[in-house]
Image (tube, rainbow, N blue to C red; front, side, top):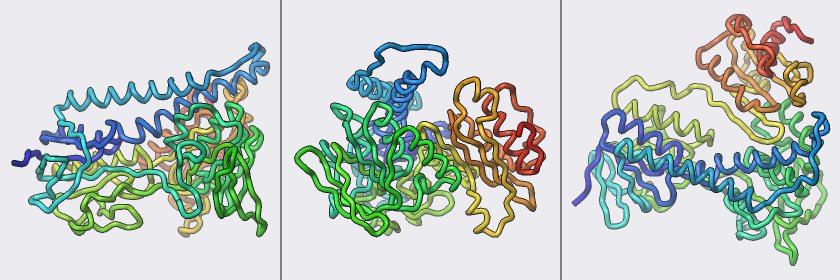
Length: 463
């Protein structure tokens, strides 16, 4: 006999577990199915442990600049095993937190791999020997690293890594090739460079961090090179081979062949949705390039079946998954849900950090808008100068006709903590008038955000 629920969520990443919590809050009898660890990839093998590693790398790198602050440090060193252990401890702590939240909200956790069969009013969920039925089923199975075995881009756990292997190596490689310069690739490049690895990044597109505004991409490239990172851009990877001592990566750049050798290669060439072996196709679910096609509320077209998060397509961000999940469950409950098209920020936790929301300048022009662009560098911001963090700038983009803020792009120290100010402004549909009238505390690096909005209208004060 099947166990009956009101709501079943498949996958417990930041999309799945948040969805389950909101379902419980709204009175749904809820179960969540997880084949591995509560919290999913993001908490256990992605967002959180990488940030722990990056913080260790940042702290170690700062030690080499202590003279700039009138300080001195003798014989700084690091214990790589302890760095990795700290990262795993942070992930374990948050995993325990999600376990607690499931108990608090009386959500039944079902361990195992979920398969879907025809059922009514929603598909039946089969986990091992158990059958679960519900009025609604939400697929939140996430995604995994894309590999290309045909040219050797496939992890072996020793010399070829994806993000998962890069989080728990036995030792830091002396030399490293990173294939792909998106957020994941650049974060690992930044971390290993901080600990002294010789790092080369390969990108097939004309610039690194290709989804970012072009000015930010160029500034990031320049900053990373100052730190000692090397780049091959644009370059096509033809083949990755294992050698006696490491790996050899054959590339084509500028019409010429080149081979890069290193101890280890990290493959960061995108992701694929986790849609296999669940029975989705048999139910009639439409899948486009490994991602479930959904409507504006997460519906798949199959009665009672929804999908949210990475498995439902871009942007592949944890906070987008949580937002979609809350929207989906509130729609199911008959509430007026949060706006699914709210601006979604993107953050890259390199040194320096990169953060953005909304349209790039190029995208605004492509859409036929008349953008008014403002910029302000941290090198003339008082707090940045005092903190010794003058690298980077803030760029704002307004619609020239309406005055609406339509994009913001930042590179610099802790800009991932500042971008939310612009996200809130865009969500509230603020124009230049409200942003110009906003009072920013002094001295803060966030004052550069105000100055960039002023600059777009020829009112900048401190340049």
